[in-house]
Image 1 (tube, rainbow, N blue to C red):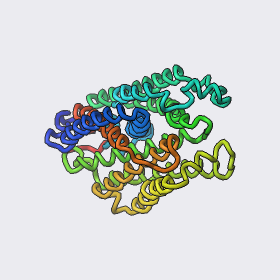
Image 2: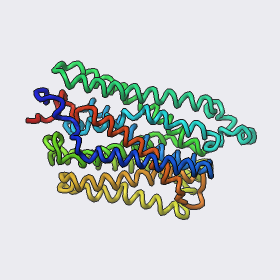
Image 3: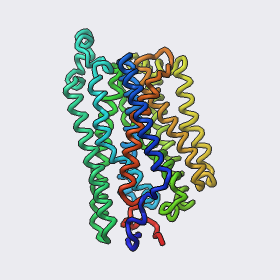
Image 4: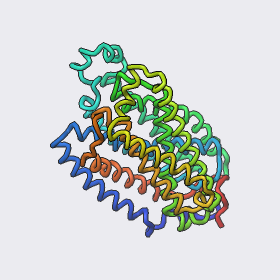
Length: 394
């Protein structure tokens, strides 16, 4: 605990690189938004498709951060304390993400065939599923998701700041109890959200492990992002006083574990569906294992599993902030490719075609998200000063 020093000593230094990151992010958001507006006017269907992939990537970082945050409040450990504020800042972007969901709500008829009455009228399967897959209920569920995620993130951050100014143990109990129920709530809502926003792009197909696959990827991406950001500021106080090689090794071990979890979920779904060879299930993989899509998924497997698996076996790599940041950055890159592979073949299964809107929408959403992330981060101490698991800062 570090309650003996003023909180101002633990704020993000004004001359640090993350402040420059915010300026770059805002510039990228402006350029990306303008280019996306022009591209969307010329090709509205492509805009909605590109926007969905970009949105899901940044949303995944917020959801994964929320999950890791609650896991740490339940289990404890210094590894979570040193990245606590990074996770809280990422999770607190939920209000922005709720606003950024509006283009998807407006483009629901362009994105989802179940939202088109003329298609549903000639499809018995979609008629059978229409009680769940209909536009009003789809939008109502989205409101519930964001209310649940935003509320949990708000109170986790609020009570964490309350803990900073007191030696009372009650805030820690509140955080743990909220995390126990919040983790269950997050698992349920994120599963339904993945079904609504991703799996229903191909409404004739289904997978009971899809929600686990989505959340596994979210947690992996969020931890990779937190490690990347922590490594970027690890050489400056106050993080330089608590991020030790041992702490970095703990984070590396956790990243290794989440890589294995993602691989397990992905392989489990593939083996079950491929071995069953059912006509209503197997076409989903057939569309994604032919032509250029095979190259995409092989690249994802190499960069998101094989490479981190091999590198993170090294103790020396995990104890180096620069080395582990490189691995985490590669995982983040692979996370976007993985999401692209999951979503884009639903629209065009012939071959992957990178459209300019894929880049501009990623910049627009990501620029705004990163700007809000840094803004949240600089308004609070970089360390949870009242957390008993935090190493003492002299």
